[in-house]
Image (cartoon, rainbow, N blue to C red):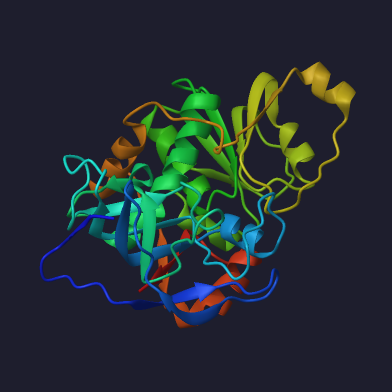
Length: 326
């Protein structure tokens, strides 16, 4: 089908990609054909690819959708458009533009971002400022959107309210704290697995050991899940809210229903696959990152270092986001 191609930017026939050949096994570096974009697609030369817990879940065979093997993981990344399908709106996305890519079946229904080139539907590509580093562009979008949904949309934080966060030194937890501060939170407390992680937090954030009961919070944002959630709920004031974002620390919890009902705490699971942010929110958040109002910690690794990156991410030894640099 007709495509446009940037002048002076030839696209090779083959590329290097990380592919999973068996669920539960590490990915391999393969040489594969460069994908051909469809009429509504753009082809992006990848500069940076995020390595996320979601990617590990799919690669482990634990996700509801199992891609056909072998497949290229990666639901999120950034780069520059080198080709555009004939039906792509050139007023929105044009060849040469820097973009971040996310969703649209990447890393599951279609080959993902862990490759030198990725073909995505134009709807899954968002132009980013030229001034924004592409590793940061890859890393910031989904975590900022998740934090915004947890704090502002679902959590409905009000000025002066007290916030509690688990996993506060991680990418989402850190942004939860930052967004809460920008929206007038009165105070915040973070439950940390180890005291040394306090160095990743703003100086005015209180810290507590996992499971400790603290001065009551109005809103709890739990990014890790697991068996300690029940203990953390005891620190939510009667009538307060608890937004459940993730379950890296475990998928099962035990609760006392009489205690929960007496406390009248609202449990609010956050499903970002179903939730739609208001128009312009994601672009505004990316702009905040580009302007330095929001900060995301990025650890850059090479594709050859993927095994170590996966191992550290799986055991929770990463603060911020891991990004593959191509």
